Length: 361
Image (cartoon, rainbow, N blue to C red; front, top):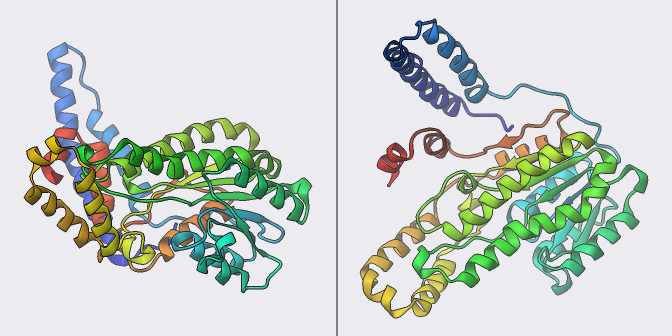
């Protein structure tokens, strides 16, 4: 995991200590009361829970410990979605670390800027591949290209990073079924399609599958249902795959970035304006009448405010992906995000829904 700042570590530890006090002493008292009502003997419930939760605090809140690194030389990685954002930066980063990179670009055949930038490396270890993750034909062709360009095809492909994705927004009643299908086709089905195609090569290498999900793969939010649905799917697909691949020695990791809108440019004011107009124009008359234009504009203003928010440096995400690829014992999940988002994710995934709804909605 990427090194954590002293501020983030202090904040996470403070939050965890608070939960330790609340759960370590309040929960045992409740359990003891239940035992008395049931006529069962009271045991050292308090001590047991405090010890268990203290171990949890140490695991979650402290910086990660080194777990050894694999030999990089001769290892190849396929990355999807290398036209912009995480994918473009990751391709450069892994090349710098010494990996052979197969950079899948949607716009290579159309001379996209990202593809041209990577081709200008003029390196035998940087190979740009035309790849639309929604096309069975292009995925098949990319795999054949990889097989023909591996240094040693018998060693297989060391890792695949399923990064290609799209983002959108809109309240449920304003969002068409086509939008749900289109977002999932890229974010979820694209991930599954590419993974299935390269798994024989990954298994041969006893390598890695790294899937880019999101904090919204662990918790929902207003206006983000199409995106959340697709990323929840990526999470559970990755979990199922991890269980199945254990037999083969393949490690499967999930990256759950927080808000990197500014760093990646995935959402701009122009995109918000275009999407907002489309949502309103295509909404059923009944929905427009019930919600009203003022309500709609209020939420569109909220989306515009997000365009200048979030982390500006994507280094934590790149470092976590590199760790998932290069560590001898990679983590199941990496969550590179700002402290307040990390706390929100813990609250929404561990506390009762009624409480998290009260706090955040």
